[in-house]
Length: 149
Image 1 (cartoon, one colour):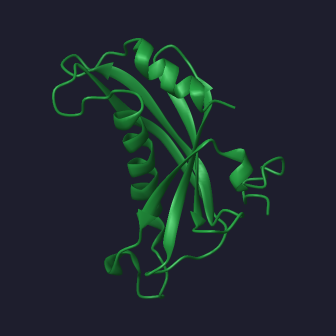
Image 2: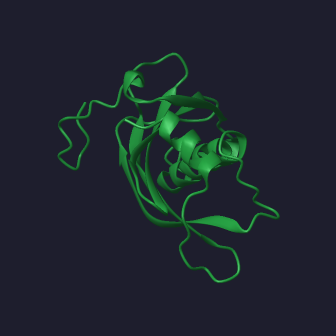
């Protein structure tokens, strides 16, 4: 199914993503309409991206001198999910710059090939103290290149 922003080249299937992270829905994720509320998808995106950066890229969120700031995000909602669905976050790198990266992230029901939601999430890596952009470190860059399109 093409996304609602006219992105007809992307069907948002598992084959388009390079790394997967399990996501457990929570009771509080559902809204009054009985499905996961739209804002919760951004928390899923944030968790998928940051878990990859910590585990694969060596990001030290407590003491490192580099942090990633989100400067842009988008989400297309393709099919509803609800608690207690078991989900997986598909992850890839769409664009990799010297200090920034745009991820493609999709949310899948466990065992399904078609995404329920898909979007982008852009980080700019900055110095923790000055908040000025800094080049992506070599370990991080290698991890990001491993999941690039």
